[in-house]
Amino acid sequence: MPEFKDIITPVDCRVTEVTTLKEALDLMQEKKWNLLPVTDSNRRLLGVFTRSSLYQMVIAECPLNTPIKKYIIKQVETLDINTPYEQIERIVKTSQVGTGVIIDEQDQVVGILTKTDMVMSLLQTSQELQTIKTLKRTLETAIDHAFDGIVMTDEKKKIQMVSPPLLELFNLQIEAVLHEPAEKALPQLHLEKVYESETAEVSGFLEINGIKYIVHRIPIVEDGRVIGAIGKVVFRQLNEVSELFKKLQKAENKASFYHQQFQKSESARFTWDHLLTVDPYMEKLKKSAAKAAKGRSTILIRGESGTGKELFAHAIHKSSARSTGKFIVVNCAAIPEDLLESEFFGYEEGAFTGARQKGKLGKFDLANGGTLFLDEIGDMSLALQAKLLRVLQEREFYRVGGTVRIQVDVRIIAATNRNLEEMVKEGTFREDLYYRLNVISLNVPPLRERLYDVDHLIGQFMIEFNQILGTSIMGIEERARETLLGYDWPGNVRELRNVMERAMTFAESGKIKIEDLPDYVTKKVTIFEPLVNVSLVENAELEAIKKALVQVQGNKVKAARLLGISRSGLYEKIKKYKLPT
Image (cartoon, rainbow, N blue to C red; front, side, top):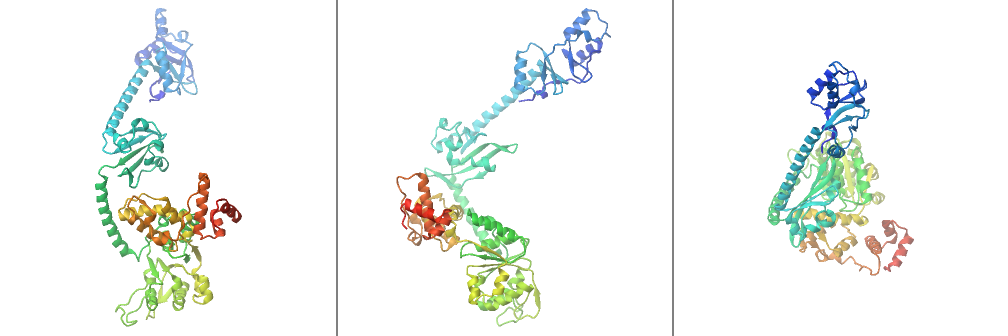
């Protein structure tokens, strides 16, 4: 729709009360106007000089140099420049006046509007509408004959167009879909997601009646806001595409594996995004670790085996000022005691029998300018602890069999699953090294204390293993989920990952069932049957209490803390739901 100011004829000349008949005649002939707006010195309207006024002066035989003042028509209707176009269109269609005078906010004359102006504008608008209609017909034809399913929604998330193949796939009639909210008519597509994310996305493999399909969700953005969305449902010949994709994925995984093995000891592979969690404490811990990464201080990461301590170490290095340097990993528990010193510091030529002729660089040499990650540091001997302490204090060391001091600039990140405080008391870990390492301490909680992370990780691992294994597992049955939530996970995230890989390998129905889980998991968890004659809210509360009690192995104090209620409040609810005490 054009704007009013774009269709008026601007007044680029000035006519006053002293303008002569000849001057007015010349202007009318030049401009082809039927009237001339007459203004004062401030360009404010005094009246108009029309062709009728001109005829009266001619009939009165006025000389050409006669001013037009006596023949000006004072009663004139004006239009404001900001009048809506639709209103102008109605006025012109009903008005008997051929031309109108347009004024601005200061009552100054800015132009005139003729019926010719409006007719030309209407013709242009008609042409634009015809173009839109043609485009709409073309689009509808393309959608009707699309190979796959297509649906389009408007700014209010209501369906405006839908293709026949999509209706056939979901066994729907167009009357039940058109102009309905997409979330109600086609909830499987989740088109509402892109209205918030404003980003195109592709779903995983979905299934209906044994037919697999994927959904492309594309937002339509104008002036920085989403005004609609397009959903493209791909389902025909998807099996063939899936097989080709699996072959490509296997080739890429194989190449990636060898590439990672080549770089494994020299670069960090994980970032903060790899630490999957929805637990508030873990989120806070990640933020603290990210802040610590910016400094130079030694960091000690503590936690049970399998909680992700090495992932924290990788992410800290990746986000530190040393991210361009090497990230060297030493597992202190995996290297024999008699070789650990040479692994740390290297050795000179001829240092011992069987050594390389030209000697060997140690991990400190390799990590110079970067980060050295000492995993399982609690398994290091006291003798090596003393030498490590010297390196941390002096930033220098001697190679095995060497006499030259080697200067290094290495940041230490250490990790352990052992109680170092108890080891210090027992004399199996040096107290001075403990305080040297424990500058910044990060305690990674076990998975049994992160109830919501178990459920979150189930979904994330499902996505990961669908890609790795080429499976199409889209969910997990409730009894299987409750079993996984109720298990105490002594092996933490690593164990959950292994169990999910096994379950997805064994699952055959598109969903993980309880029989797909290992026996040692299912035998250790007791699943309570849901109560009848209670509300949905009460059932949800009951399930939360049961899961918390199972997770903390019946400890009421810990369960109350996990649920965020008092211990007495927990006992009241246990009594209410008749749970075993």
